[in-house]
Picture (cartoon, rainbow, N blue to C red):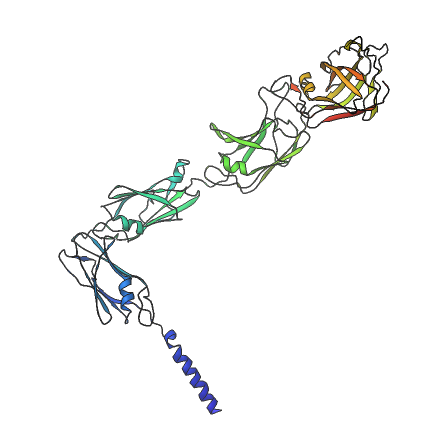
Length: 534
């Protein structure tokens, strides 16, 4: 047992001895140096040397050493005496210059321990003992004690204050390099310096300040004048970007109706979280806030469901009023849809204050003036000259018989003339131009069963107007229109089908504003069967 204890103690002692260097680590330091005064009388020639706390690697120590005059490193020769390294510069000391004696942390002792921290000492030659002071600064704290709650407030000069320069005037010319080392802004911001005078520096930010943020400007005691006198105390000032921190709020949302308006047309206001009916498809939108808002932040934070493409405009005379206009003339709301306009959180005012929650407005597009035209029925009259006209209702797959008394010898005038009536529902204060109908109307024939010879659109009629020619199959009702088409057709001795198609895009026209139209959103068609009997 005793032998084991001895073995254990011997092993522990060996481990402790092996780790001795780590347990008793002493960093390398500079214990003394020369020159050791900040100011020397012109003509003095103090020796330049550094003494370390332990023996060092001479090569590493010489590489880590520098003596600079006004940022220019001086050449010289080295000599050693024990732990002291002496440097003799090749040039004499000069009056009025700033010297910096420096040893960086790459210097190591013979055990490989680096210098604990960078050594740096400034000295100069001359009799100027007056320290520089800050005589003016803008923006700046107004109290000498730099109370952080007593600061210059910027923000009234929107948006110029976001790039407001910082200006410092000193009691005498200062060393520019020392100023760059002494200057800092928190939060940090990039920018450029200019020197309109030797005692004045201007910092111009290269990026905007942040709204509702307090900035602290610091000039440390690294700042010196041209003879090396340092600022006696750290200078600090504060300034605030933003004069208020209340978020914007929408106070009203309403329609913007066309100009000129349609007879009897009135706008509508929206109420949050309530569906408002009677919205017209071609209306734009207007939102009033309690203050001016940022249009870029607004555009990305307004969502329409279903989607609606829009642009944002703001009247400079009323910056709190925002108008949302459809992005293209054809980009109207879809008739019959219920839309939700959501103003998301994040809409910012001119000083960056953002809405903290969303606002929702709902409206149904079913106004009387923008209902798109819709075909509700079609009727066929085989012979307009028949003593007792009989109309046929054209349903899909209806069989029609077109008698043909065409005599090759007599020419086209022997074609029978038939009549096609198309019934529409249309919006209030609109009519259906025959030109738009004719541009979008086609007859599609299979197997050559019918050969169109001539179409003549006579007219379109609104409710209450006198319809020329044979009486229609059904009288027009309020909100209806009728387009009457006369046709000469040749019925060949083949069977096939006949498709009457009115393509999407057929549009009505407002009676009050010729620039306003409602467009059929989809094709209408009816396919008819023609037997092979002529």
